[in-house]
Length: 470
Image 1: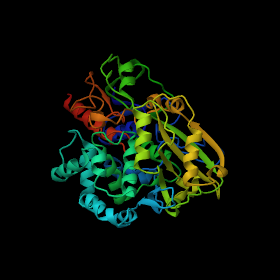
Image 2: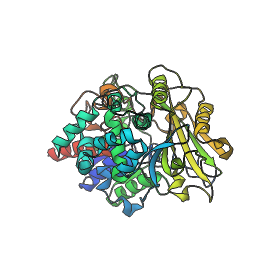
Image 3: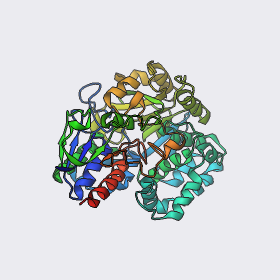
Image 4: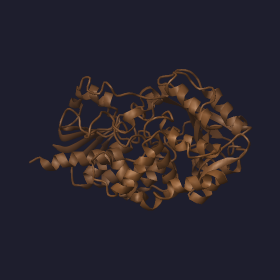
């Protein structure tokens, strides 16, 4: 009998399997697709030689993840590559605010009235970042806080809505960039703890940047899988699990799936019936005949570029997709241009580029024209550079990854208490009604992103149970 079986080979399932194997447990991992990766893959979606990341591409949480940093992933081929700027937010007049590794450079891009405010906001946390991120991403009580004072200070700043925090800024560049940071979790700006979301992304950039993985995000998943196999674990692809009886006998079962999928497989009935799914993504991968022709010079140097004219436009777009059930006329876009840091992604002189905007969950329309009109506002002539497109609306995203229910790439709405306490109000979020079955997906804390910490935290709960057994 195996000690543990893991279902789902996304970053969290892979991390959970690795953590258990590192501690001497026998582990087998089962994945429905023909390759490991989940939301962390790389494929030729458009033309030969153009290597796209179908979902996650830039990894501020990955390079800062306490779980990943404790593993020898570089030994298995993972190499982080950095653009000159982690992120830029251009404006229609050709200027831009930036998120730089340097706090001073970032603050200066906001203008003199907000530079000091920004420095006072982030600088107290940076000396404590490694401890803070471990405490923040290990909640709830999988580990006692190592620096409870700093964590409490962070909570005072971050637990209120981001709109409260943004009132500290007097001018639009700082407000707009920060609003864009919060929008990465596809949540309305006025929600609980959304200030913490913006702070985490900003601090992550200052601490270690927003890199891409050399060759594509698949390198992260492949490194985890290779390490797992070296530890004696086994990986089985093309293996769909529809019920627990499909799996070999084990002392524990760990699911990198949504709560509703787990309830269906394990027969938990309505246990997770109140779990909510959020707004969806509408994503376009581009093969380009050269770099994106950004008007703002800073955007040409950045790995990630946020697109929204001002904080009001961003707020309106999020509200339309999350609360009003309609696609925004001017969507807020998150875009990544991996070739700025990694020329291996496309043939010489060409580029891969991706962009996504927010739409209602399960939306069936086509946002392509609205996305490209937005891009043309900040990069005139963009359409002339397009060689090919791969378009994925909510239905296509859900078909690629079963955890993206209705196109929700966060695997659950990041709004209200569900941003912090997911999938249910519980101090044991990785446990389920069955004592031998555990949940480790992005539907559990600390939530969405390629960081493996949900898998790491769930593995702790699993190995404590296994060691307690005779």
